[in-house]
Image 1: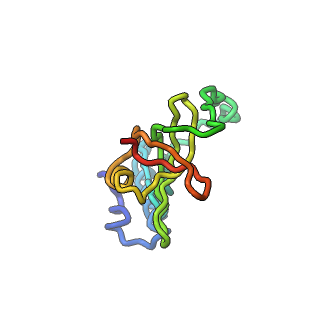
Image 2: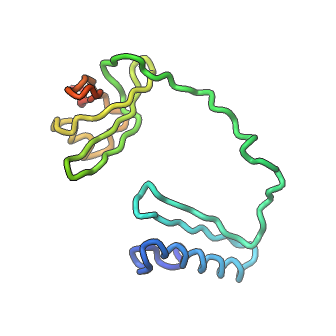
Image 3: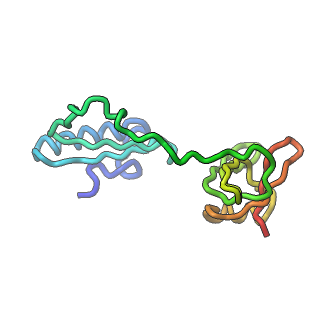
Length: 157
């Protein structure tokens, strides 16, 4: 089956313990079916805090030594904008929810290909509609400095 314990909404385990029950069940299953595998996924209470584990009765081959020495070096370094930029294309973002209001943090790319970090102006109705009502990836933001000196963007019209 797809699930062994039903997952957090259906299992009813304690907030930080339901995944331990899933691991115990997965280990019991793979011990009973040698050569099989089990995948356990767990949410840490936030969607950005996700964990996975793959379980089997077959030991992994760790003879390769230090696995991290074979990873390639990053060569696609993105230059960071050193001065004011007029507009960016949104590459990624997050919205921090808070009691004093929400704040959108944006990472974007300028026309020159430079990386720019700033905030989206959620007080602007058009910008709020794009960020709150959908996925703003690829949207163009016109940038300005606010009275606090931050780089702030609004959806370019």
